[in-house]
Image 1 (cartoon, one colour):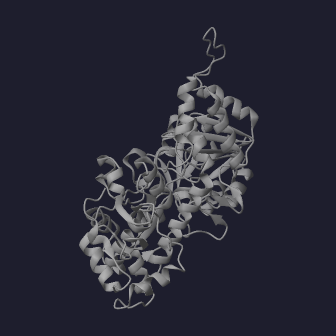
Image 2 (spheres, one colour):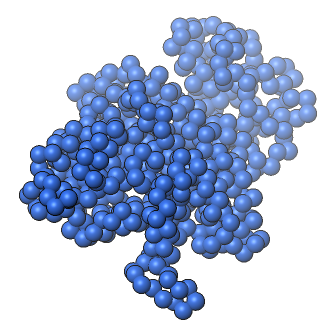
Image 3 (spheres, one colour):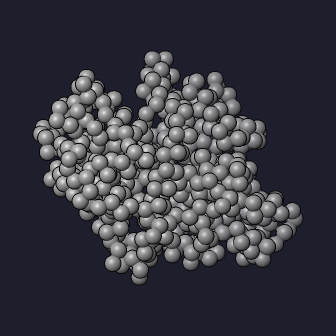
Length: 510
């Protein structure tokens, strides 16, 4: 708790300038508007003052002018708690309400203390004050984990595994789901059940995290790297069609790469950053040549393409539940499909390909890829909150868009008219010639202000690990990698923290 918080008090008779000075003196990002009895009337943050000034309110105006503006704001009601509230509940309130401080009140509404987020978090969490993306646990996670421990169902069998598979499949709109140990393993298994064999070729996005490319090689197949399109940064459908139509030939009911002679078996579009690829032309190209489409939807749970959920747009979809994803099981993944035979094959391969579990007979090489019941329990609790989490992520994106849309040299993350992105990661492009510093310089400046940011991944065609792979295009991915910067966007990102990020980017304009 704050040892001395008397410098946080301010009265209605004070001006907005005096409130700003009090904020500077306290360095806590908040002042408390109280009456002579210390009854809390409202709170004022840096963001409240910044928004009021942008709206033309004068610093010499009384605090009442600022509070009147707050009456029309969704942030008008301060978040408070009784003085005897447990620390665990205070932390949960902060996560749910996106705040970093909570005034503690007695039974008469008088301020008796102030608790801040840093006091409730362990030191290792505070090493970066505003992290890029951290999970949000505010539902039945503890309850379901306790059920696992109480029942001894902790490994790869248990009721939560089946329940989690059903929840994700139902949400995606597919007939079946298979829980897998992580998103990479899900992609690898999907390739195998789709019939991808050694020396086949699979078209995949070049602007992506390396996991999907790695899984193609796990299967013994070869990636063909396809550039992004500039409008929405996703796999370019035109380059897909051009490669299949002009650089391949149809031979003996199979599509063959003219240059390598290899069979082209599948397309793996990656919905990067949560925005869906333009799937209709990709699917049309695939159907023309009888290719399997495996969606890497690991970043896009909850996103929609023309009203349809990602993961069900192709033949097989794969999700990830890593710690920074829309929902998390710590690690974890899911295969979704309408094909019952593929589902059975995925379950078979992911459980060591057991043909006779009593006599330990294995007719194929399998994998230890099943998800544990404990992880699935987390996933069920997270799925129950998915719609709320998506709303939080989209609100964060909207707020960045409103605040940064007019900043010279900053291009906002796009969203197609046919898409409803989950905005898994919010990324902007920095034009160094206009903004005055490039994306990496901005990254370093934000880091000095305890704000974590990240560039986009090195395109696969630039990666030394992928130097022998075919690539079509690459210029768009190179530009996006050079200029892209991902900003803090945790679902529980406090409004004041987002204001700090926004202020830091606005302050960098030259």
